[in-house]
Length: 129
Image (cartoon, rainbow, N blue to C red; front, side, top):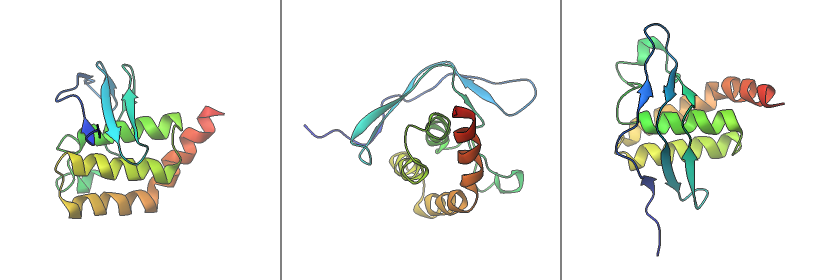
């Protein structure tokens, strides 16, 4: 039986700090990806800023909107190095599409990642060594 691309969960618990922008997962998040043909489990305790979206763009690309689960998954992929950068970005696009995010938003986020995602990816890569 072919698995359906998407998240198993409909909600996720996060700690929300009084100050700052970093949240911590308090429940697991599972995504089935056709890119990797596997399920990816985001465990409890992962720190995330949701989407690394500049403040002036957050009214167009909300961090806590439809794409939020995808942003959490993407942060996890970048931090762990489970996939290379391009594959991680492809999985985020797939996740956003599975969540019903509009095609133009998905393409815009992908462009933003191609232009600036290297900085975060390389930072995490250096921290893993």
